[in-house]
Amino acid sequence: MALGLRIFTERANDDVGQPILDSDNGEVLMHIQPSVSIVLGTRSPESPGTLYISSKKVIWLSDVDKSKGYAVDFVSISLHAVSRDPQAYPSPCIYTQIETGDDEDEDEDEDKDEEQQETVDWSSGLSKVKEMRLVPSDPTQLETLFEVFCECAELNPEPILGGDEEEHNWIFSADQLNAETLGGDASNWTFSENLVDSIGHSNGDHDLAQNVLQLQINDQCFEDAEEMEHEHDRNNGRQ
Image (cartoon, rainbow, N blue to C red):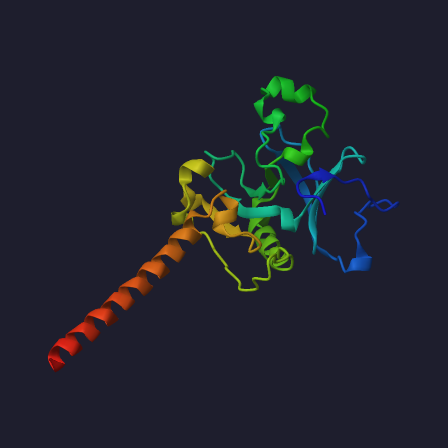
């Protein structure tokens, strides 16, 4: 299964044109939200479309151009949040970070100015898009969308590699995140990190995990030193 955002055009041949899901593998439709704009990276917002959230992925289909649509699997969404901070984005939205599987390459489209981006074909560079915003016309639906995202994220854990089946559920709180990274006041955000990714994985290093391990090692060394000191005192007492 490919990581990242991709083109999605599999629609039912009827007046509604809902997405065709992988029902043979248990994929079901969880939520439908009409009148949602999508913003990919720093590109301009797309005309409103319909958001479909299935048990496996997030799908956005244009209401204007029936040949246009995007999809991203939940296992590729490393973080999702409700953003109401106008400094981060003018409209309240669901903000997501997407794992592309190629962190070393920079998205060439991100370096283009707005005028150049308008001339770029809509399907170019999708696999390198690392941020996606979903902007409903009705902001009161954000909490419902957030809850559905959380539910579906839990349904799609990342396959555990290396035989380590112990769960490490790292959760960000608003005051633990760097507001400068997200832009604006973190108090205007509601966060939920997909449990498939630890903090170390999502931020590109494993310093936190290493620090926790080092603390555990240091604690053990301290306990061993105390035991040796007590044993020495007992031996001196016998003498």
